[in-house]
Length: 247
Length: 247
DNA sequence: TGGGAAGGTCCCATTGAACGGAAGCGGGGG
DNA sequence: CCCCCGCTTCCGTTCAATGGGACCTTCCCA
Image (tube, rainbow over all chains, first blue to last red; front, side, top):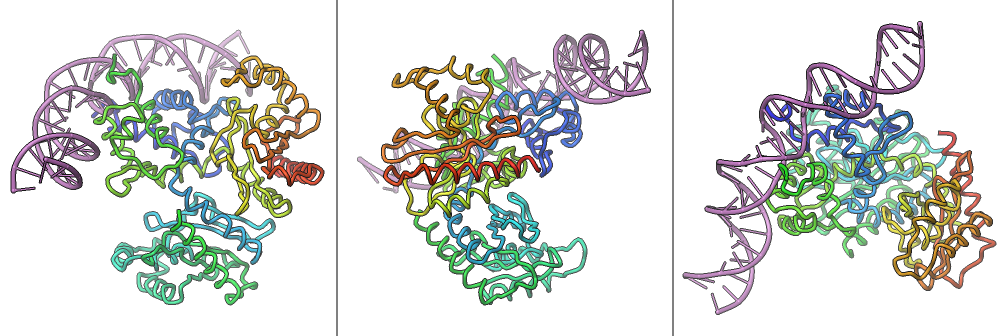
């Protein structure tokens, strides 16, 4: 069918290659990488060599391959999250200090909350939200805060396509959650992600009152004091919004 | 000369394309991107469309193009700096709180210090060290701390190839700086980067006493109190080293 | 209101870069 | 010693990538 037997372009292959690395990193064998990416060994070998030549991949110990520093550099010096992160960091630190809890910052991408930054307290509760990790909208307070503060049209789109693989929750449940979140101005989710934790998130709004990001905390169930958490988060979220608008 | 008139592979072009974005981001026009990358407009157009299809690039307002969220995600969930960053963040925050100064974390890459993370105090002195930014070894305290704690062979390599474009400092000056840094266990650079600031950096050492990273602060000239800064940095650096070793 | 410049998109013949099977290499384990 | 299993290199085939040119907007200025 093509120069490539599988009919995909070089771009496709490169993406498959870098996407083939699992979260935990730590370098893969060439053959394992080839398998994960679904590419012939020879092709993988050639592409890896080229990418490594640019420093996008690096040779690890024992002939293994891992993502390279140069790739990290290229992406992180021009990332679309830079401005957001810079605006948010000081406030996230404040929250972490004052509330003594894990803090996270997320944006919406394709009906999932994508976590842009996270500060974890040393001995704090487990926090599923990895940096650059994702969570479905309907099971993360961040996701709810983000979707609940979007155009009605977008929300409807979301509900229309909504389907829970486990079938535990229906569109109506989610509609309720979103309505509650929009009404209250913050999202809360108790023991959904993790039975012993509670997630709270507030939106960071632009001038049009649409969420461009969400700011959240994950706290142990027993330590819940909404009265203390929500106002602090909202204050911080407004601070972030202001700095975003300024820049 | 080739399928491509310029004799470079698709990989080359893609790298040129994403490397063409300047630090400040904010989206480029297609034609500007083409020019910066040194690619024909048509080719740029095609590649951009493909990359955008994977979310590696995104359409900005007014037909402009910018790096995409998906690219950020792919790279940051598997980056080689993840472990380092995770180990270092809590200590960096401590330093920032206790010393009330800008803190930065760097690694060595090709005779330059590559800044992996930075925490800036709100109204603090200007800090040249952007996240994902670089500084030559001989004019950054981070760079000196990193090179001063490497194999003798590597240091020699560095000195051999050393050439200051401005001709202000010679290899012997640098040798002196490195020796002093190695002897003292920390690097200091007064008013080099910025006339009103002082940079201090300590190495984060592995079991073999080689620097895998550097931890530094940038402080206003007048506030200099080495006695206070250096021990705090060294303590933090050891903490980071320990956490790295554990993981 | 019309003309023209600038930026983006589409078309399509040409061609060499990309492909990947096969064969070579190397080390470690039996 | 030999075999196995990964990585590397070779090389003939082929079609994906290429980019000049034409076309289409949109915007600005006369």
